[in-house]
Length: 277
Image 1 (cartoon, rainbow, N blue to C red):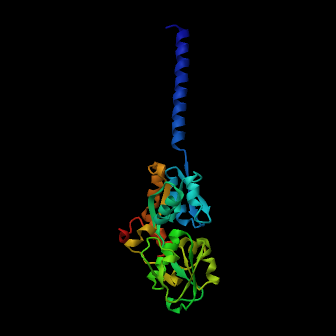
Image 2 (cartoon, one colour):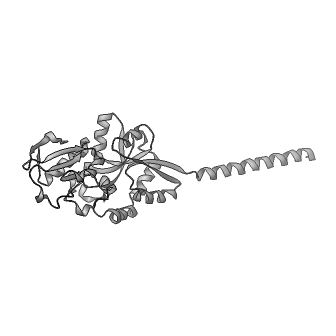
Image 3 (cartoon, one colour):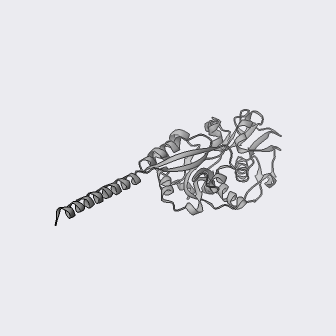
């Protein structure tokens, strides 16, 4: 083999080695790529999600929370692709939203069940309610039905057999209580104007209401299953492996302990709650 041919072979070998090394470098870089998942939430309480984010960063997944101010926004944003997931709604709310808005949003993992509660700045127990007192409750269909069921379980009203109760479902109201319907976000703010208000857990948390001082708290039973909160995705993304990792990181013992630390009994991890089975 003459020197010219040897020189050409050396150049080819060197060039090939550079490409191989470059390819390896590119592969390693790709494996380090961080995937960002946009998750819509209601309000600003991000303590649980901050911990989930730290767990996921070890898997090169980063969470970006998108905060919304009313219940009509997170599902619209999800359906339109503005966010990847949301975590704000119950199964009941989600199913009703799909029927009403013709969307295909599904739950891909349980988070917590957050009992609604009746709060007041004017009374401390149910027996203090008087004839004609005013009670506010959320005006969206699923939360209104749930709030009315709470008033029934508290012995304040009786409802007919409607699957999703409305004010028209009330068949007995011995105290002639005035039932006012408000946007869910306004229920806590109304406490200065009404005798009592049924408030969602998330709204109560943002308003710094103490659940231990609630006049009455919704009881969690097997029938509460439709009111479990879920991480939701568009149906086409139900098998997305990254989203499954988000659910797995959320449904951990560490997160369950944080619920007890931060919320006491006002929000309860639902993914392994035996009473719901």
